[in-house]
Length: 248
Image (cartoon, rainbow, N blue to C red; front, side, top):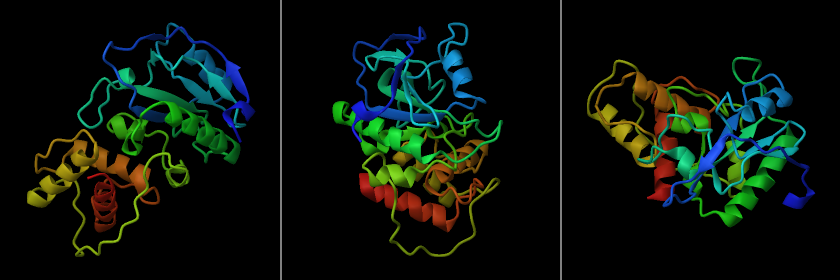
């Protein structure tokens, strides 16, 4: 399927502004709408009073709404960070997927929606220099605030098409108790440093605080969705090590 084969609906949103003069588009951020219908989501993303938007929205049938030109800055990321960058809106393209989300009846993403996302994302990546490690979810860049696109989202499927990364752990790690809230010491600091090296906004304090729980849960939601508990166990560590080996 080519991008031209998709159902494209132009619905310009007024909620955008100019990118910074030195801004380079080098991130793709995926979201779910968290609303009970596509129509409601489109209305909100086009409502000046809401002051939120995205470049694209894909409904559950695979139709793509074009809301903000890629050359403009959409307002989708909010307070967020990745790999030391904090103005994520300035350097990213945001795609919303119609889905009620965790508050309204979270559900898997239909094949038609995922297929449309694949083709849209590949078209974007063919035009924008976005590294694979910088294809992220909203929960990756704002782990204390967001859960989307969530544990039902098929990141492995996207990575198989060259959209983002998916780890294949090979190292056999020494069994140990999971690090969790209340843990402290050099092992905690090493885990925090490794998560920060991949891109998560986490300072290596050596204390397993709420910020660490949130980041580990976001990492698991992306790369180990069968168990999202915020504890840094050996399986989570192996996935992180495999990812770092892919980028460093």
